[in-house]
Length: 590
Image (cartoon, rainbow, N blue to C red; front, side, top):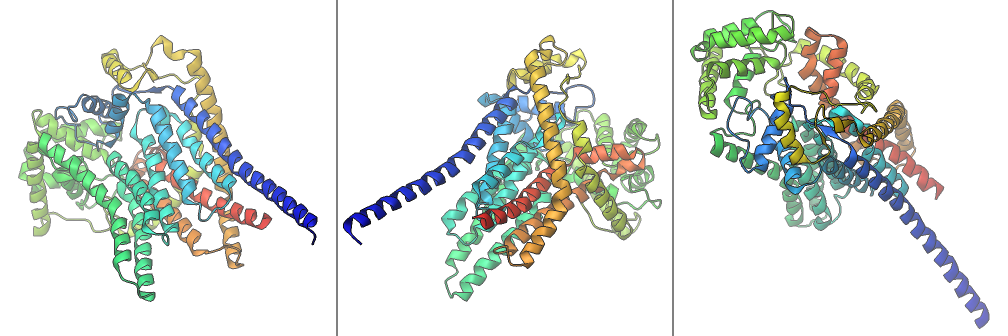
């Protein structure tokens, strides 16, 4: 080849290389630009979306409790003076509200910004499996524009159920990303350990049902730890490296324990109670467990603590019998919500709590804990002596009644039926932010509390009944929210219908050898599916009391109210399966 020919060949190579580099750069920039632009749109819309604080009757243990706790936290007074509701629920959500107030970050912007970061974490977590940047961008946008956060229940209302969504996604994403990178050096795994802690710690402090995420966390951790130790033994390497990785695995859960201990310590210093809340820890929770475990003869799974069981408990506990009249009066008041005979489900514990504080209005946390400790000891002694019959079975939670053998099949059937019904998304559709939505005006006595919350959370917090709440901007944003929510639900419905066929297609392709390292997506998909199903099974058992006295629609409404985590996990599962299929197609096209 002559020098001239060589020169032409070099120039052609440079030109073709430049073209390939340009195409590659464009292929990287365009999806990132699309993701960035749509993220800005979503954040801007969230920033303008008005929210409301419900402080009227019936919210003393819910919205009003969180609002009051947040105001005290922002003022540096922890959760405020002790009262019957002060320690009824975990303080994680009021901490977030107080943080938004102190930093002057709008609550809506904080929630949606957090959602954007967690969606990004999930998209990055799947990178070892999904090579196409466009597919990962679609995953990110699908979770960012989830219809869950276009609803009044999870976004427009100041309530904790919406805040668990990003932390649940982050917790699961961290362990998925960690598992898919289990072979990389420790420094490559460290970011996922940090992400796991940032997801698990707030999740454990926001709601009391944190344990639903632990099976996937523990199984992922166990699989990785066994793999590291087996590799070290097979390759005859020392145990120093695997042990360091196992220690790193324990870090997020250790921080969860540390955060819980820190909150418990502050509660003890302030109130004399060691725990994050009084409903699921401490002596009152033990008494609730005792009462729900009493076998009163006639079975009604909707009634956790029957009047007969309560009477037996008072007969076995002289301490509890001292406030008999107050508890019976409370029971009479609460059973009016139902059939006038019994108090159903966990509302029996609220009736019990109200009866105690009505009898002892000046009670402190220390005196309350001492009282319930005596009751617990007396009930336990009665069970051991055989004077109080106890139910057998599996405990789904610390306070719910045990699941007997005869309950398992009906429970499983109801779980599957409820899961399918929830996947229709009809309830979610009903809770979309309506274009003409207006806040419900509470009694005027709560106006001062609303003003305080508006000052804390910013000008976009609606004052119920105020004239400026119906401004054109509010109506316009509500309309956009509504139609985006409808579009999201339509897409999610299609994804729900295609989920099983997509899973079957992926299994067939795996059997044909088209999927690289098929165990990875299989374990992750099965883990997410079982996590979603187990979460909904626990929810179904917890709210099934509704079927004892209310309609099927009321039961489904109650189940959906407690199911934002379920919807989030199902969305992640769908993204994983469809992304695997799209990734295979992308690889084949190349």
